[in-house]
Image 1 (cartoon, rainbow, N blue to C red):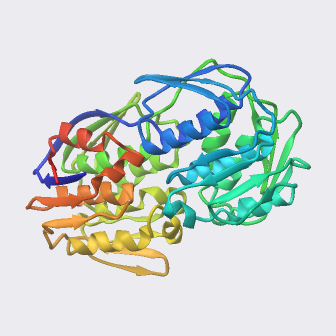
Image 2: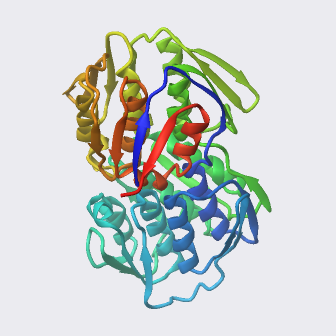
Image 3: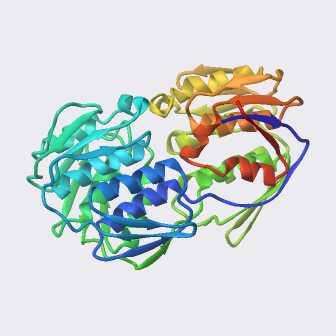
Length: 420
């Protein structure tokens, strides 16, 4: 999909946040491993969630979907079926969560994904499960895995991704006995583990944490009905547009475990006026002060934060960005490239992206990488310039936020879809 973004002076209106991808992955897995049927409310149209739904169906769950909710009937056939083929598409979360689940279900499975997913690291979770009797044909996709877990005592290096820990935790809620997980490295993005523990708790499973050790206690029991909250990552883009007017985003839980609600702290530093009322957050025009943030716990926000930094006065710093290199693209490199295409002075210094605010170029056309977050951040930058810009390859937003352009237009943005 190719589009033309035509900038406006102000953006204002009210939208609903997209359903949280982070919560949806976890709820789906808990429901599929639970004791009975679960109805999950939300909109599940993005490609990553569709991937998790399809993978769980292949493992034996029954999942019915409609516009407002989905119904999950848990996996019941626990026999070791041969020739199960799973395609994880481009979803790193699906892949890293589902490998431990396959192990505890005692199934023989072939797993593959698209080209970029084949490059993303999974060696650590493979090494962890090998220690407990699971066999793998390799250390990257495509691969085959089979075997039965010997003991529910796991040791994991999580220095590259907290998703390894979340995957083991999620799998542990299926087991009657206690499941012990020892993390042998520093823990990155720990707030995502908090999301996992919170969702598991809603399905009746407790997780005890003592330092770098986790103990999973109990088995999943369906809450019967549960609501999947709005996504703070997706809302971030719309909040930044609020700096050019006034934007309200509904369907957000201010008490959520989602770490990306930290965007409100950043916007306060920038000088925005923020109002919080129940599940609605309103952002109004600010003073455009520079900001400084450690992005380790909010790594998915970096492209949006870089776009924000481009309109701030002075130098903003986005620190600890190394893990961007193993995302859907080399997102660290692509973020710098994106800013430079708009004439923004920026540079990388010891894994810190530094941005000296000021947009000095109006690109006529940009070919996007296949990276949803870079695409949406680029659309933001197009909103801050004087001339229209053509974006090639905008369809990648379907991975996390399919309604992004519709929400953008509802706030006053003008988007023309090109038919070529």
